[in-house]
Length: 249
Length: 136
Image (cartoon, rainbow over all chains, first blue to last red; front, side, top):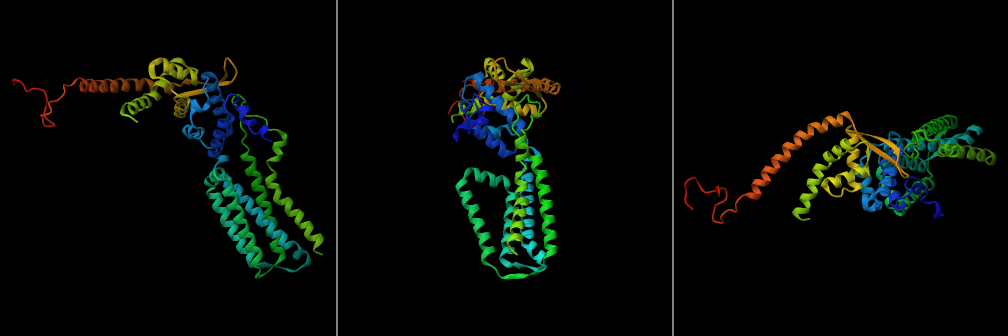
């Protein structure tokens, strides 16, 4: 498993300690520097180490400090704002999914949808949490990198609170007719998915070595794979709808 | 850090951007490690990659140098730096300001280093030089 861990580092800077390269790469990615410029930085570090015979640590010092000293511009597609838009698109998808799954059976049966208070509270908390995350995405990412265990615990804790609220507080908030909920849910799902596909298309920013002419061909596999996150929620919705319709009768 | 170390560091930091631009103008198109060698050969001592490349990046951001990529004589791709017309013009103007500053600083330092040690009895602010016609 560890055999390929530094494959990227060795490809772009074969004469540099891959752990040093990894730290530099991570900081530049966190800064949102475009992939072609990161490729150029790595190539230059590599050439300097070959020429001088020094290690990268000796010649360039701390990789994070070096990345900051370069002060490279951020790619628009890598900005915190763009990442925030991806998070919001996912949120719209999830709200759409919940609305569709909750309303499809009642819509078929011609009954109303009972909205439980806990689900609404949980949803509002989720929306606020994700909006905050989208706004502070840069700091959140740095925190996750610096304290992965703590970040995972915080995420799990938050999920327990949201899901727990939704499950435990079952007092009904009221009944609404199912068809409008279904239509709005489908619309949200469609809008969120289209938006996320567009964001993911713009966000593809592979590491490009210098001299590749800036038009390095993306492997066909990864071209498709990067849209998978956007399709996850619609596929899950379709599966849940089928399950609901088959088992619910 | 002692005064000497701090002074050396700050003097180098002050002159390095101008000297790097001058080296690129004289030697370019040239690459990073060759610039470092020229600076060392010129008497500025060892300039580490961690200092040099951010500085060259700044020069490029300011439009004073431009870069191209080419294959090195052995192996990896190298970024070559060349001065732009704007860089040459900036260097020409800076050369005059640098000469004026270096001359003024030299005069001050030389005057201070060559000044006589004041008599401990002399109150501060009074001219330690003997007054015209006074006997010592």
